[in-house]
Amino acid sequence: MINRNCGSTSLDLISLREVSILGNTDYEAVVKTALEKHSNTEGGLLPILHEVQDELGYIPSDAVNLIGKAINRSRAEVHGVISFYHHFRNHKPGEHIIQVCRSEACQAMGAVTVIEDLKKKLEIDFHETTSDGKITLEPIYCLGHCACAPAVMVDGVPKAKMSSDQMDGIVNELRALKNDN
Ligand code: FES
Image 1 (cartoon, rainbow, N blue to C red):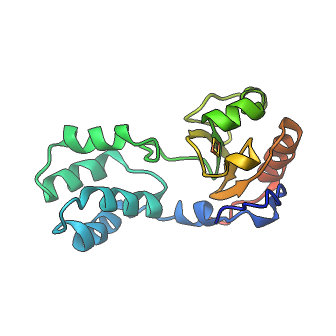
Image 2 (cartoon, rainbow, N blue to C red):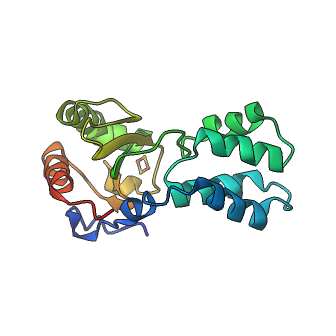
């Protein structure tokens, strides 16, 4: 849920959904379930991809083959859809995902500095994961949270008016969290 009051900047609301789902490595079962639900629906490819990514955290290359065969689309077509939407990942993410808004309002309110400082602290670029496998950094394009810019999502939870110092604190807290998987 979007926090329209620009309230929370702390880590206590972070959902660990991303951590728990990454334990699911049985991609064939996940794809089969998604296909059963959506393959006979017009425009079913997107819901299939959403479901697979929600379960696995990304869409494995082998899953692309299975999906394509099941809905009579070529691998290139399925891959094209995955590449077109920023939301989809084709690599397994880290234990935690930080997404920073790169759209105009956030850029105008300091997101550029937040992004540069985050990249330096994490020693990675967008779409990369830290060497310890802890944190993946991704761009995101407007969270509908523009009045509270710069906006960030941490493990799916929106954070408002974030500064580099606040992001430093969040990164430190994420690094200190233990993965229960
Ligand atoms: S521009 Fe960043 S939330 Fe809208």
